[in-house]
Each structure stands twice: as C-alpha cells, then as structure tokens.
Length: 494
Image (cartoon, rainbow, N blue to C red; front, side, top):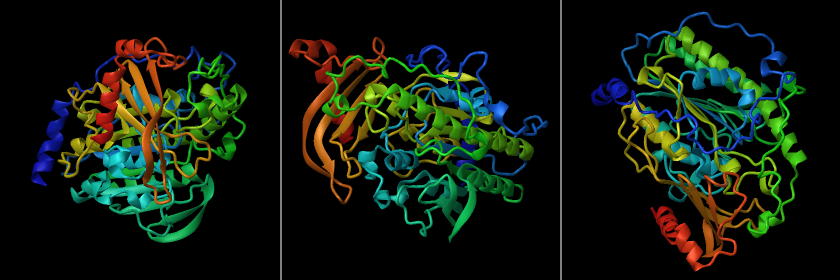
C-alpha cells in the first residue's frame, strides 16, 4: 500500500500535459447546428426544469483524509450517441469546462454487455469472452477494475445497470455497496439493494443518483478513497423520459448525409435491406434527449456534493456511453454496425488535482479498453491482469489503430454477420465473417470473409463510399488494404 500511496500523488506532475489540445483536429461529423443550435426560438433544457439551487462554495482542495489517491466517479449512459450535448449543459460546463474531451472515443463492441465488460476489464471482447448480452458470467471477475481497486483499499459502489441477464439476487463481485437493477426499467424498478431484492418506486436515474449521493456522503466518516460505478438506463430504447421532461421541446434536427444516403449498393446485404427513415431517426433522437435531461440533473448534483465535501479537485470523473446509436444512418436505427454513429461515444474526463482541470480536446484514438488502465494508473495500482488498452493519463500512450468487433447473436434475426474493424487515424477497414454465436455464447462457423469495406474517413466522414466496391487488385494495393487486413488479423488474435 505504501508504494501505491507514493505513486498516486506523484502521478499529478507526470500527467500535467497529458491531454493534447487539438480543437478542430477531430474528424468532422456534425452538420452545422446539429448539436444543440436550434435557433433563437429553441428551448434550452433548463427552461423546462424546476430551478435548482446553485452551490455557492468555491471548489476546494482535496480533503484532509490521509490517503491522497483520487476518488473515481464513472458515469455510464446507455445507447447514447454523440450529438447529444444539447441535453447536457451542466455536464459540459463541469467536464468540458474543467477537463478533457476525447474527440475520437469508441466503443470496442457496440453492444451493452460486451462493451461494459471491456470497460471493467480493459480487454477486447474476444479476450474477456463476454460476446453477447445473455452470458454475463463469462466475464472473469478477477480481471475487473473494481476488484483491483477494492483490493488496493478503495471503497467501491455500483449503482444502476450491471450486466444484462445477471441474476438479480446475485451480488456484483468486489463492490462494498450496490443498488443493482436487472431487468432495467425507467420507472418503478426491480433492484438488488445490498443483497435484498425489492421494488423501488421512482425514476431510474433519480433512484440511482440518490443512492450514489449517499455513498459519496459517507466519505465524511470513511477516510478511504472511493470508486463509484453509476450506470443509468438513459438513453436506451424504449425511451421513457422523467415525467417533468416528457413534453420538453428539443431543437430541430436536419439529419446528416449518412441519413440521406442516395444509394447503398456498396454496403453489406443486410444494410441494403434496411429502410429506417429520417423521420424515425429524428423521433428517436428526441426521445433520447429527453431522457438525458435527468442524467444532466444527476451530474449537477454530483458536482455540488463533491464541492460541498471538498472533494471536487481530487475526484477523477469520467462520463461516457456504452456505445452509440444510429438515427437512420444508412437506413439503420440501431447499434451493432461498424459505422461511426454506432461506434463513437461521448467521452469526457476531469481530474483537476491530476492536471486535467482545464478545457482541452484530445484527438487520440480512444476506446473503452482504456478506461480500466486509466483508473488504475490514477490510483497508483499496477495491473495484475492483461490489458488491451492503456492509460490516457500519459500523453505518450498513443496508437495508430483501434479494434472494434461484434458477433452475430441469437437476439438478431437478421443475418447481420459477425464483423471486425480496423479503425485507423484516417481510414477504416472492416471484414464480415461467416460466424455466429451458439446458444452457449461461443462463436461457431468457418470464419470465411463474406464482405469487406474501406472508408477514407478524412474525405468521406459519413462513410458513404465503400472504396472496395468494384475495386481491383491494383486499387486495393494503392489503398493499402493488404496491410490493413494483416493488421486486423493480428489485432483479432492479440
């Protein structure tokens, strides 16, 4: 423990320049005004809210507890894509104004349980083994960040969604306290409350917010640093907003080129058959934004509590989503596809005492596999299980590419096919395979490559033109596809 305590405070000097200011360097994706600029007559989220008291205390230095390691607060939303900032002004004021925005953050698997397992373990899904939403016990709990933090002396708490199909009566391993909801509902949910299974009335986001605040409040009398894993239902379909936000007006959305793609002959077969419309995407966006208004209220209350306790400076706060969601892009209204709306996620980190307290944009390729290594690095804990990601606290940790992967599973009746994707800094190469998960959640099939895609993300950020459609061997050589295929194969085996 002495070594961990020594490393923790010293880490601040090391990461002071970790986030690279790169505003404008990220690949453009949002059409002008798409992320909250709804015009002069558009309502702001706060116009529909009950006025909340604003904490008047200035941010304090870290508290007087002897352990100087940071608290860690992870807030994880569900199915939240980018372009949702309008609903989160208080969150952006906190984390955007006092931290780092990772502009190129990705879900490594755009599906709830595999994505969450990657967040907990720092490993790609093919390594942690949880490939679908029905086999949560495939995840080796010894590999999780909560286990390592708990054994290093952190007080740990889980509030909200854990892993799909987790048995409600089972305690989530390596958490001191928990309020686990399964199945997850917006209102009047079924929870495992520290070992007692019971129904709790109220809105999901508010219920888990209140329990998280209680957990944080107990740090007045408990000197240990804490780790809180807070996972909301928002903004997962079927979206049910908190009643006071049910009819909140949201800014107009005019779509983006990928929603109005003129032809899909260069896309895989299942996508050519997809016909979700702009109107459906626009309606889904509005429903999601309304549920996120309550998440923003929770973030406001977390900030106020940390300020009140004098812990605002030395709490590492990370806000992200388990994956994105298409709003009619390429005719698709779901996740599970290797396109930017499905893969890219909001990702903001603040830790003023660790040098991450000023507004910066970092355009390094970032994945969910980086979260566990980052938390352990901040806590001064040396990982004792393998990681595929790396700590984001060190600016020298950069990568040339990132792996994304997904398996066709029993829940999908359409033949989407299993795929893996090599995401580079300016290109993306994807292969689809003849593989499907069996009833035991393990892959079966020949693995034969059925279809391939290559996108120039700089020239074609909306992924409208698959450069491999009709391409010959010389075209593939010029695009560097043989090298990308080898890189993808190596990443899938690593």
